Length: 362
Image 1: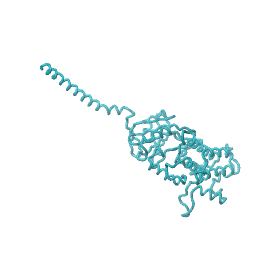
Image 2: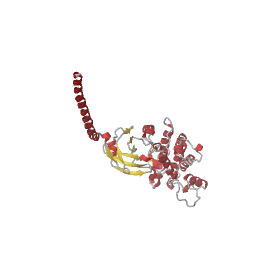
Image 3: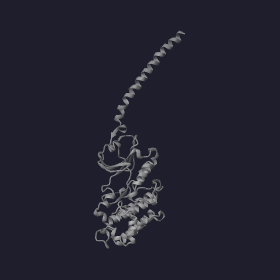
Image 4: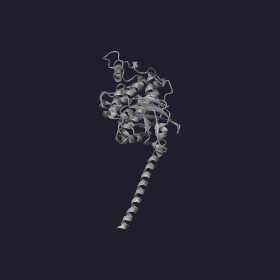
């Protein structure tokens, strides 16, 4: 009995010592962990002004030509707001480390789907590469629901101000034709060049960017897939006055035919400089959509009233690589009107569009 008692006395203080030591160790580690996190760039909290949201670094996915991106470099970059919408903010940002300019699109947390719901979409968009499509270089998703898409920056900006603000270059046939072909090629790749069709869903002048040589790059394709249903529907409704297909009521119904209709509207805007909808009609019952304006002009033999006067010439008087003729202009107009057919089944597909454009340019 004495031996047993002595053994018990020895074990008790030993166990107590171990417990005290473990408690001290755990306490010490807990006190040190915040300091360790502050030294880790992947856990650092950096501030970027986007409607007052503080972004917490969590994860950055990079794609082709975006391998040198770092999240700290991106979020610390001086940025200029160049566009805003209901679902996000677009920045022109100078990355200090690489001394390069990028487009940064922040998507508001309340407007986006959950990260786990669109992982496949991000991977798909990050792999799409074509000379007339804006590539996705990187994607960041933070713990508070914030999302960030990184793209190259294009110095001439979007096609909308180029067409609508009277830029003299926008009246040149060679540039109109180059832009038309480039958009058609990019759209053709989205519809046919991948495992399954990728639908743009919101094709318009604002979502076509230009480089220094007036080459077009389609942006924001399938962006609606990253938004929740409410925000996606708001995107569609905001495009109601920018030439969306008449049958497109719900964003989930967007398809190749609705994209073709939007492409036709862009062709008409390039040829006329007019917006697709006149929001201030002179009479309450005026039929004021751009396709109907064109049709009425054709029926009334008033084509000269809707085209740019500068491109309505019978022969080439410049160094354009493709001589401008009235026949070519009218053929492009006819193609645009076919794309804007009220019946989706009568609209050409992108392959047929490219055939027609090649014929016009030959």
